[in-house]
Length: 337
Picture 1 (cartoon, rainbow, N blue to C red):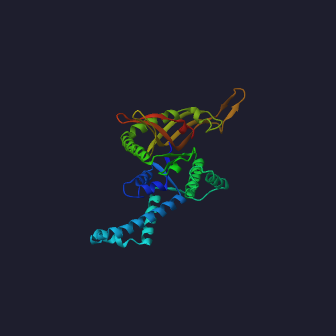
Picture 2: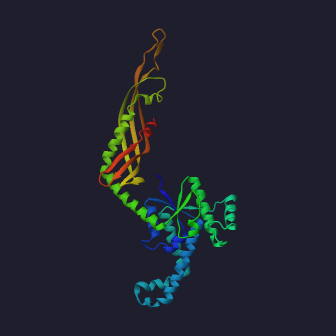
Picture 3: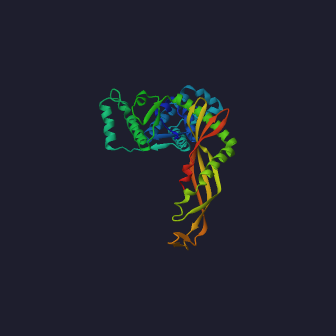
């Protein structure tokens, strides 16, 4: 199951006071840093956020200087007054924003539009369609942002979650974009995060047993003479010996795809590496007797096949019963031969 691709509108940054410790914005960036969601932004959005953040921080410094001047008497606040310099504030704001984008691996979309995109935006403007209302020119950035996101969703064949405190942006209709209340969304994701921790703990405890079950399924599947006929053309496969199958469940690639009645459907990436000895009749030095209609002089030979692949296992997680395998498609392993 793919992670959610999430876009955070400028309005949410403003409402949450940007990156104030422990707020919704910090939580979203933390979820992205921990690979629970993927954050996406645009150059337009980033510039909007920086402009508002710089402006709001300078206004806050100015108010502090005027209304809270008495705090200069307290040493821990004294230095703060000296930092109320426009260049210093802008530089620090830029560094804070850049750091969050980088550490949370935010994908930023540039200014890429075609003629139809621009026409669609202006048609919406003149016909007062969402996100425009009463010819509000200030909504032009939102219109181009939504077009960028929609195009990205089409390209990736994915729907993008829109988190916005702006009703106009939330009402924009597109199959590839869907708006949800950002507080409700974060609450849901934090529940998922708790489930992740429980699942990871269970996977650590049950890892050997689950790997052993998958190993058995692979060994049974690989022990099939007909699988190797195409590997050694024109000969008869006489015996197969599975030397080993090594299984590794990737605890860093866990995806929740369903939850019902307290049971969680979990997809886990699974690395498989195996070695098989295939015994066959080598007819390189043999001859065919037309009277007996059979080959003479064939020799038994052996070839070792080593392969590796990455597939996935569907597991079910129950808080009381732990993890068990719901489905493992061994065909994904066998088709590597």
